[in-house]
Image (cartoon, rainbow, N blue to C red; front, side, top):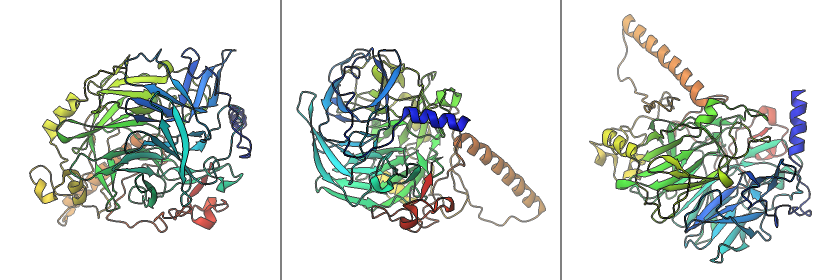
Length: 576
């Protein structure tokens, strides 16, 4: 009976995709409900991008209060702009509506600015299922769209090209730097690609790490096996860091890997070097956040050559229910954490969490960046589909002071430039600029611009990655501020004698017991704890080069052999 009820409820909330000849019914366009603060209820599944002093919001679903007082959801069929050049209060700041023209209406498209800052691009995304709208099929070929502002908070969309060698995905994260955009992973289903036809119960992997050169207008699809040997990685965080001694690195952290929706812990981060095409990992310490997906994060260059990544919100797996049951773990997701590079230490904000959310976006305006982060939208992390409470943020806008690590009521266009938080400065003064152990000499060189030998006195030797014990060991207790590092020391001698063996056995039992407790805490509701890939110890799985539209990691699942795409393309796909 419970399963039947959930199926009926899902059917009421969503409609299936119809033929692409049936245009999206424009219920929202021309209505004042999306810009009236009194009618606003919630927004989510959107994306946003910052151009100079204007924030653009595109895609996603919008909930508003209808005439009978109920909350109604429809896709965002317009692009919106928010002026950040003047100060405002979230409850009355105007949102400007912009016609999308012929550009597709999609959830969570990947958005990034052009190198000159005068336009932005949109790629990927999945067709919305919200409300009772008629929807189109996804594009037959992945399309790249470009938006050009007119200088008056409006503008026009135009088709900039296609990418026939790739497959359109959803749930991928993107970043940009050195004239290129980078898109990592994602998932495929009947709302991202027509290849699935009417098979609405299957979800498959996306591409590898995609780069698009905006200067040459060329695409490249490279392997992400170093970050995700399973071939699955989505709904994590992605950043571009270019102020730490090298020419620029892509930083990936968190999210989901494997078909079973296993969360990636935050006790390590993955680096991709676009020049060498290599992935490398580095362990983190400190107040390590619990694993999550669908968070928002911003990266800001800090004082004295540091780089800080701020993380807020997110969701644990799976979504708890169609009915809201607020768990303390969900409430704690309202905290803001900051990871300082290159020390790789996590720090946690100090305030009482109350309003956790996921599927929101956040940005830091200003050049140089100001100290305020603007967050947009989101829904409760424990309730994904319906019956959601009204957003506590007016118009879904939240303001966070990055330097003071506190939420604010209003946006200040004249706020001071960002300064590294005091707790981070104190931590660096105490623990040092660099980690006590590097996971590999390459990471040390990438982030310091020096060879490992040149950092003697500030770091120790790299830890071995050939053993089997060098896996993740975060504490799971974010409030302690002393998260575990993956020591994995290799015994250099032979343990002899009964006493020595007894001590070793007792220590092993204790370590295993602690590891079991840690995995239970860190994985939360995951099927099993996910551990950092040991890149030097294992080769990439067969088929994971990911150079073609349908080449994926060769992780076939016996129970999925009837999938329409898995058998012919060796794609890891699972049935929902």
